[in-house]
Amino acid sequence: GAVVSQHPSRVICKSGTSVKIECRSLDFQATTMFWYRQFPKKSLMLMATSNEGSKATYEQGVEKDKFLINHASLTLSTLTVTSAHPEDSSFYICSAPTSGGGNEQFFGPGTRLTVL
Amino acid sequence: QKEVEQNSGPLSVPEGAIASLNCTYSDRGSQSFFWYRQYSGKSPELIMFIYSNGDKEDGRFTAQLNKASQYVSLLIRDSQPSDSATYLCAVRTYNFNKFYFGSGTKLNVKP
Image 1 (cartoon, each protein chain N blue to C red):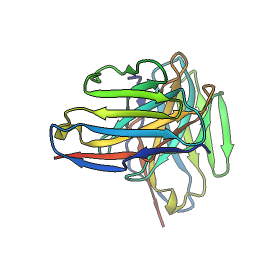
Image 2 (tube, chains in turn cyan, orange):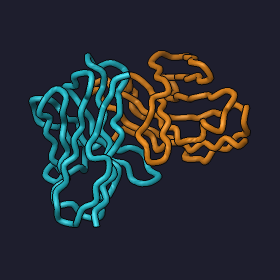
Image 3 (cartoon, one colour):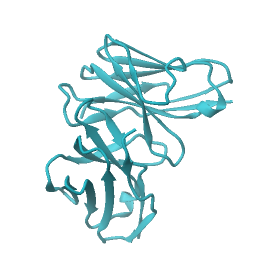
Image 4 (cartoon, rainbow over the protein chains, first blue to last red):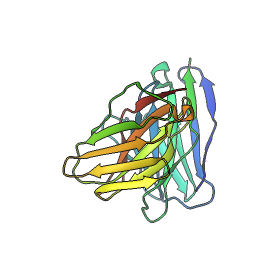
């Protein structure tokens, strides 16, 4: 199957700092990528849809200015958590559907963010 | 977010038994339905997907879809301890090609 990578896999930062997470499709092009957040023992919550060449679309209740998304190329989307606070600590996962809007989406390995 | 409901469990079955996992969804516009397995601290792994009413079999796994009842299930035959994980049901919408997940059912297969 297709491969999606994320970097970093784990990050610990101080409250008030900004953290950038990268999501890359390694062997296919992704015009769309999805960003999810998962709290312990909870399901994946869709945060936003990242669109190559245009603005991201955010789910209701997700702050656009807090979670900045940039889809710079067909293989890279970045999520920046700005002015992170302890409540932003979570597992962030990106995914990319196969090209042409196929049935599958492939998940990155996730990024564990801990804000002290 | 579109509603996708699952029983959180845990569901405990003995090794070799059939595990039955259920999921209901609220959006009739949902197009495709997926089952993922997630181990603690890891990202989800796709087990199988289904988009037509009826059954779809893949090895020890069978997905069942009933669009009229807005219900999808996953059967795992000959359950193994290695099947112990959280199983996530996901639906893909028609209009925006988004995926929404249920809260997951934790499965424990006892040796």
